Image (cartoon, rainbow, N blue to C red):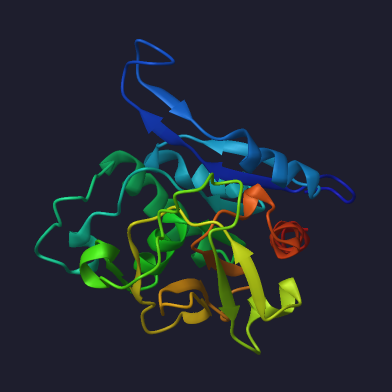
Length: 239
């Protein structure tokens, strides 16, 4: 990256089978992911599901954003022998994202994992997931909120002394919620930085890295002032 140029932020894409937009397989991504990055001074770049090209992309990007989607990480990747009936896989996407995240961390490239991206980040860092919250925590909040995703679903508490607290400058945030899974255990190196009122893990980070943050909500909707600050901090760490 040259001085005063926009840092290149790699953004993982979703993939869909033929139908709807195209009669052929197609990539997809909500516009507000890219808008949030561009508004913060970054240059977003979509990353296809091509593990063989991961090193080449990592040579060119200054940060990595792992997006969410309507699918789940394969439970076998975190040691679960059984798969809950609600689990849906996109094996090619998970393989590509796993290689990208592992490579980015090895290079100390800033990483932001959003929703399912946080869950993948946790697994790469040696953590485990809850496969289906309604079964594992029957009294949990409605983490697949009934109201629109551009509105808040619940509050979260942010733990003091964490990178997340330093970024958002607050101990609470209002966030949206669109997930049936969550981090069960962040693993041996990541720490939990945010918790929902029902105890569900809402954020993780790895202090060994320049910037390694996972959030269970979708900050690209910019619901809380802290959401904008998360993207600003990612861009700043990428320069």
